[in-house]
Picture 1 (tube, rainbow, N blue to C red):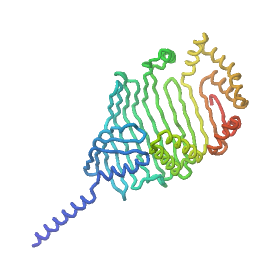
Picture 2: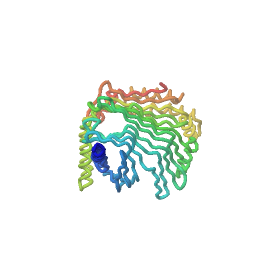
Picture 3: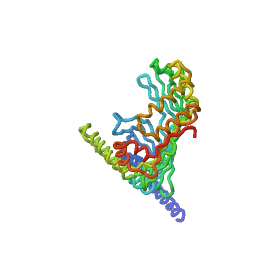
Picture 4: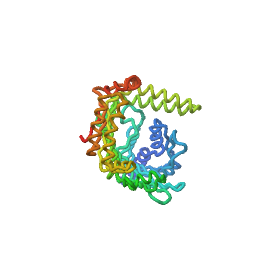
Length: 395
């Protein structure tokens, strides 16, 4: 009797855990639906020929991404979602792996491998009120990428990495991106005149990297790009940075709605015109905090001066001197004495010893965009002072 009762308990336990397992099993179609609910804000939709679940993994077979602005869906192949966990209606995905890209069309072949995202959060109710309600992944990675034309590689990159990190109070997002191992083959440029300049400047092959860093605070919509640099060997480094306020979740939502309304308008021309007017109105909510652009020379300036001088029958140093002589007269038309003095001083220093050039516009306090546009149309000289424009060299 005891044995029968024990056996009965075991059977009941097995049945219970089996039912529990079934009740808490992942619903792959629900995961896809939640992803699409979040993508809807960007006017995009992810579809799959089939959805398969294996434990906590979901596979989307024959996936395609449709974006409203694109003429046709983008084929993504198979997508693997690993370590998928449900949390009160939202989903956390440990890793999203995409199929290698291999497209060969009209003599152009594009390949990319090792494409994935990690720690993706799919919100239960997507909106822009908090970071936890947004579709975000902590990292995005692409391995070797290349573009070949007629069998010859013309562009490639070793690796692309993008990272996002969220503050504990979910009010600020920090981000960075790096594209490393960039190579571009300019020897195939068809225009003879361009090819002559490319050879003279030693730019048949260009190599370098692109990096970016920044942060976004949701409460005041302050977006700061602290680094956006293009750094190429034997050429130089161009670094842009900027900061603006007012880019709030509410503004982003209004912009998305304006785009959606324009796209739904059967009269495309009228839709685009209305969109332009809407965007002008929305831009009025933004404030400009400051920006700058800096160039650090790595040898290209001397080559450019030599090449341009040769066209005039002089060497690079002589050509630099001729620029210095003409610059004050050329800038006189601006009718901005202070700025003209800065430009001439910086240009003279840079041409004598090419190290760096920096142009900055850092106002004493944030300026609303309508104020900047009004000043620009009224008196550009006053705008230059208001923006506190400075031009310096070799600093």
